Image (tube, rainbow, N blue to C red; front, side, top):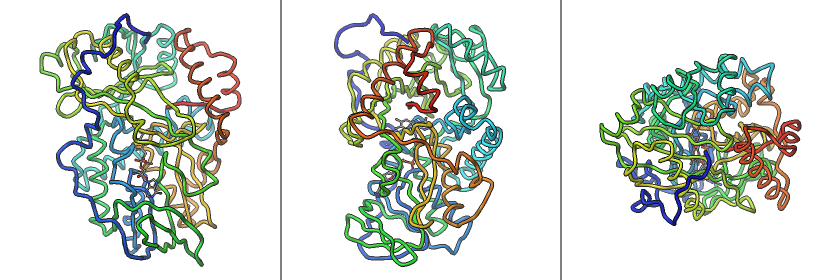
Length: 467
Ligand SMILES: Cc1cc2nc3c(=O)[nH]c(=O)nc-3n(C[C@H](O)[C@H](O)[C@H](O)COP(=O)(O)OP(=O)(O)OC[C@H]3O[C@@H](n4cnc5c(N)ncnc54)[C@H](O)[C@@H]3O)c2cc1C
C-alpha cells in the first residue's frame, strides 16, 4: 500500500491513543509470583516465561509427572512477545508454505502434518485446561491489494494453499475497496487472546506442579558436575540436571547462538470497539484473521469485544541488536499504520485508536525456528521464530524436551531440526545488510514484486530478512 495523500503531523484517530499493550492491560492479569531468592535445584530448569518456556514446562510435566520443573522468568509471565502479539496461532512451523517448501522440499509434507497436529494439540490443551483465551479456529484470509499479488494467490491456491477468491468473493468476506483477490485457508489458523493464553498456560503448568518464579533473570550458566549451575540477578543459585532456554529475542545465555538472531521490532494499533453498524459496514461476519500479501504486510483481526488489532508493515532493526523497552513506541510507524487503516477501511472514518505498542521478534535468516543443544546435551534451545511463534513454540518445546531426554524421535530426525541457519554477520555489516534488504523489499512491493539483484542473491544463498 503506498503513501496516502494525507499530510500534517498526527493522525486525528491517534489523538487519544495510550502507549501500552491492550492485551496485558485487561482485567485478569495474575499477581506476580515471587522472585527466587534462595538456592534450589531441579530436574529441569526453564529460562523464559513466554510460550516457549510455558509449553516446555507443561509438556515436561505431562510426559513425566515426577520430574521437578522450575521456570525462571526475568520479568512477568507473558510480558514480552507472547503477551503482545497479534494472536494468529498458525499451523505453519515454517513461516508459511512458500518458505517451508523452498527450504525443505522433501520433508515439507511432514512439516505440514506436524504443524496441523501441533495446532490441534494446542486447541485440545486449551479445552482440557479450561484456558480462557478466546480461541477461535477462524482460518486466515490473505488478500491481494496490488495486481501482481493476485497471481501469487492464484498460484498458491493451485498448490493447495487454500481457496482462491476473486474481487467480489473476497469483498463479500470482508469489504475493503483495496482488495483485488483473496486466498481463504479454512482452518490452518486460530485466533487467540495472546496474554490470556500465556497466563492460562502458566496456571495449567502450576496445576501439574511446576514452580514458577517471576522477576528472576538468569545472568549466567556453567557446567556443574553432570548438571548445570545457573546464576540469577537476585543472587539465588540454581542447580539443574537439564536446562531449556526459551529466551527468544533477548540476549542468549549461549554465545554460540548470539549471532543467529536479530531483534526486529513490529508495531501494532488497537481501535476502540466497533459498533454493530460499523461492523456491518465492513461485513466482517466470519471474524477471519487477515493478512495482506506484500513483503511489507499488515495483519489484522477482531478482538472478543469487536476492536480491530492492526499491525505490521514496518519491521525495524536498530543498530547493535539491543532489546530496549524504549523501542516499543515509534510514532512514525503508528502514523503510517493509521493512514493505511483508513485507506483499507474508509467506511470506518471517525473510529479512534486506543492503544499503540511494539515488541521484538527473533528474526533468523531462515525465518523459522532452529534448535540445538549445548554443554554435552544438558542445555537445549529453540529460537528464531521470526514473527510466527504463537503456535510453533509448542512444537519447539516438544523438540527441546526430546533433545534433553536424549530421545530420537520423528521430530529430532527432521532436517529442519538437525540443521541450523547461517548467522547474521556482526555489526556494522548486519545493520547495513538489513537496511539494504528492507529498502529492496519495499521497492519490490512498489515494482510489481520484482526482486532486485541483492534480493535475488540472498534468495540463491537461502538467506533473508523477514518479520
Ligand atoms: C508485535 C508482535 C506481533 C506478533 N504477532 C504474531 C502473530 O500474530 N502470530 C505469531 O505466530 N507470532 C506473532 N509474533 C511472534 C510471537 O509473539 C513470538 O514468536 C512468540 O511469542 C515467542 O515466544 P517465546 O516464549 O519464545 O518468547 P517471549 O514471549 O519473548 O518470551 C521470552 C521470555 O524470556 C524471558 N527471558 C529472556 N532472557 C531471560 C533470562 N536470561 N532470564 C530469565 N528470563 C529471560 C523474557 O523476559 C521473556 O519473558 C508477534 C510478535 C510481536 C512482537
